[in-house]
Image (cartoon, rainbow, N blue to C red; front, side, top):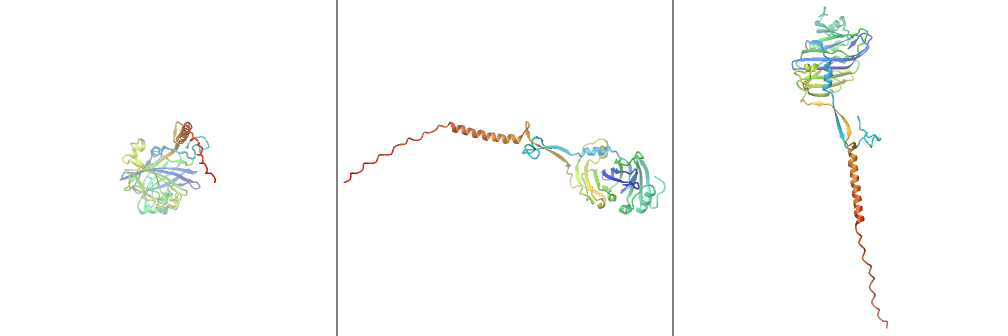
Length: 341
């Protein structure tokens, strides 16, 4: 994302839906930006010619609800931190335009809402940079090196320039999503140009396909984390239209603390198994019976049982008759002594 000179802009969050049916790929991309720029632009490489139109922002809300964590209660018997008597006493548990430059072909140019979109081919990154500059798409010189791998593979490009709806306001918050559709024999999410970013990057990628999918590598970021995997039912609305024929959803979350380490594009492949993944948030509660901790009833009941048994033994002992000791008999008399002669 490149702003006006002397202005700044940063992509705080990048959310995209990638749908792949084995022949064609669709990417619905929404960027959330911060900064004070009133105009900005970016470029999206694509492996084949792309059709571009505005996406439906409602799809992201539907996806967020589809992958939302499940909340469950987990009970424990013995008291822990936050449980009485270890809590201090409360007993509560937790919570197409003119003139292309040399080496550049213009497939088309269109206005989509706040976006000026140019679809381009180029055999030379320098020529592409010159055309972009001449037509108001200002990009840094570092872009030439970053684009070379795409030029070598004969990819095409979607260049996007945007301005806020009110001319005097800055670009801020979630932008309108764009939807790109192109042929693809394997799913790929272009990420290489993000290495030009000046701030850490965050990617939330929803993948719709016939089976669970996974990235081949981390491409220089933290290991991608699967936050959801599973078959969708029959969603309605924007998500229903997008997911038709691709019922398995894999939601990935990834962080790029140092964007300069991004080494390529995300190439996706089928996972070894369609193992479902669902985040579960547990609320731990102390098991109670009638509002009384169960452990207290068990322990207290055990103590009462011991006390009752002890008392019963004492009573039985007190009521037992006492046997009198045998009478003391006097010793037998001594035999008479013999007379002394």
